[in-house]
Every structure is written in structure tokens, then in C-alpha cells.
Amino acid sequence: MRTAITSDATNYRTAVFPAVSSVSSVYLCVLVVIGAAFSITVGAQRAAFSTVIESVRVDVLVTDNGRPLLGLKAGDFDVTDNGVPQQVDLVSFEQIPLNVVLALDMSDSVAGDRLAQLQDAGGAVLDGLTKDDQAALVTFSNVVSLGAPLSGRVADTRRALDDAYGFGETALVDGVYAAMEVGESDAGRALLIVFSDGLDTSSWLTADAVLESARRSDAVAYAAAIGEGASSSFLRELSNLTGGTLYKIDSTRDLRATFLRILEEFRHRYLISYTPRGVATSGWHRLEVKVKNRRASIKARPGYLAGQLMP
Image 1 (cartoon, one colour):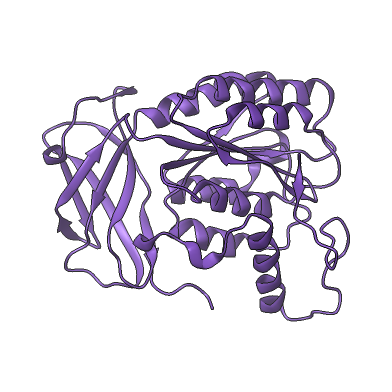
Image 2 (cartoon, one colour):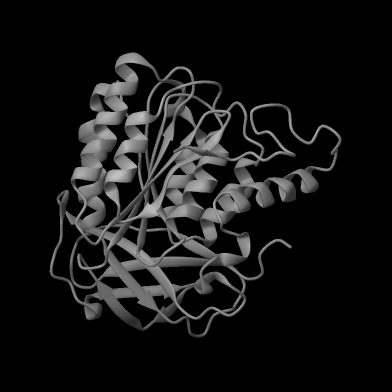
């Protein structure tokens, strides 16, 4: 069942809050509506990004000539936080379950073969999950819908995907925000796979506000985009901030291979954990991750934002 972000008092399909002129008031109202629909609040951010930084987790992809470099240990990594060397406490690899959230554009341009190819690509990702992984489906048009909540019942996510259809405009920014919240609603490593074939035309939230949330989030966002969606500065910045990649593809026929590439790459990422020492407990923290004594390529988030959330 598709759960739309809507209520008796507020309908996401039509003009909303026409009497509200304050941008901040609109932002707050939208957060309340989205939070209620997904049973999540903004205050439920991970402790790592609260006022007191307890720990920081960083997903890191290490490659050598384009191939994942396997078998590294904690002692193989150098991590600096705002230039201060940190002690790496944990490096996990493939044993931590994944929380995979498909965040899919279901505007009216997604129909016919394009819809079928998108559903096939999403189904291939679900086929690639293990029994310990969880999946969820968020779709966005001018309505953001929770097609299937995050759970290990992958069959529920598949049914929701098969039932999805395109209509309306494109609330890309709102859809990504909802997907991040869903991905981090349970323990595990949150992977967002975003698809869009167009630019945002109907979001309530601003791109800057959602990108700030991404700076606080542990989720890693990958995007596959075609058409105008491939030129989205929001998707490009989102993937850069979270340590993911924006794939610009020529056709939805390429989606299946792209989605599977994303899943495979994410499974080969290391999860570094450390307790920050010698750095401030708020503001932007610049991260740098290196591998000792190797000429390897590193893909990871460039930093994180710590401190109080917007009241």
C-alpha cells in the first residue's frame, strides 16, 4: 500500500499552506508532515551528529586500478578530523546488514517501457539482498509516498514496486529527504539509490535544507539519472556530500546494470568508526581518509556537520 504524505488538513497534491508567508514556517510545517508520515522526527538523528559527538561512522571505498582493495584492517587507515589524527576503533566490511532505500521518480514521464525498466532495475537490487538486509521503497511525484517501510520483508517492497505508477510532477528534494529518514530509522548501513528523469518542480523543502541534513546523516546516496535529471546540481552535491556517485545514463535500459553496480560497490565499502578527539563538538568537520603505504583511490564523505539541529 502506498502511504502518501498527506493528511485531512493538508493535501500534498495541491497548493499547501497558502496563508503562510514565512519560509521558515513552511519548512517547519513540512518537517512535521514528513516526520508524521514516516513515524520519524528530525530529533531522531544519530547520536554521532548530536551536540555531543559519541562516534563517527564513515563508509569508505578503497580501489586499486578500479578494483576494490580487500582485506584491510584498522591499522591500515589514517583518518584526520579537521586535521587532527584520529584512532580508528573499528573497520567492518561485509558482515553489517544493509538498509537499502529505493527512492524513485514516479512523475508522469515514468510510464510504459521506462516504468517497466525502472521496476526491473529495482527488482534486481532486491534480488541481490541477503536475508539480513532490509529494504524500503519511497516514490516521489508531487506526492512523496512510502510504498514499503524499511523491513526484512523484501517481498512487500517488491509488491509495492510492482504497483507503482507515474503521475504528476517531481518533488525530488522532498523524496530524498524522506528516503534519508527511512534509511536511518533502524540499525545498519543506509544506502539510498535515487532515480530521477527530471529536475525538481514541486518540492516544499529547499535543496540547501536537505543537503544540510545529508551533512549530518550516515546514509550514502547514489543516484542514476537521465534527461534533465542528469544535470541536477542537487543530486551531484548530494552524492558528493555522502560519499556516493551520480551516474548519468543514456537510457532507462541502463538502469539494471547501474543499480547492480551500485549495490556491489557498496558491499565492498569499509565502515570506519572512531571517537573524535581533539576537535570541536559542533560545526563542519573536514574528514580525510588515507590508506597507509598504498597507492589507492579513496571514496568517502568529505566531512560531517555536528552540533544542534535547527529548532
